[in-house]
Image (cartoon, rainbow, N blue to C red; front, side, top):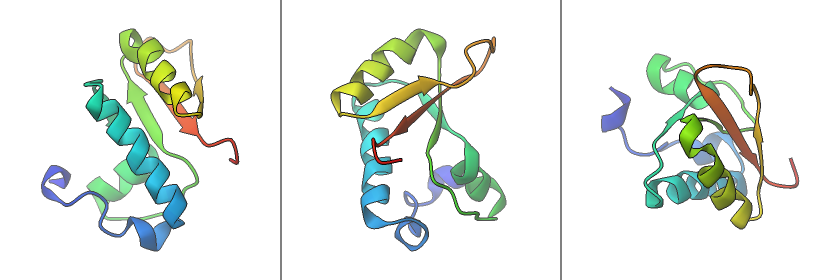
Length: 101
């Protein structure tokens, strides 16, 4: 199971070091604020299938009631946030991106 594997040991092989640092910082902000989240997209796919694919973003699933607080924390870091599919009943996604992406 993925939870026993070290945090993305090959991340630097797949993305630029500054991007890896950004992804780790975004996750750390949520963990420190005790906001539950799920990682989706390419990183979740790689974790559960072992199949890696190139990605240029970090897909996070946040509970609706935590979205505003998470968005404020990300914006305080200087990052843009968006609720990609606001019409979904569940789950909601939030993508935090640097201003350069």
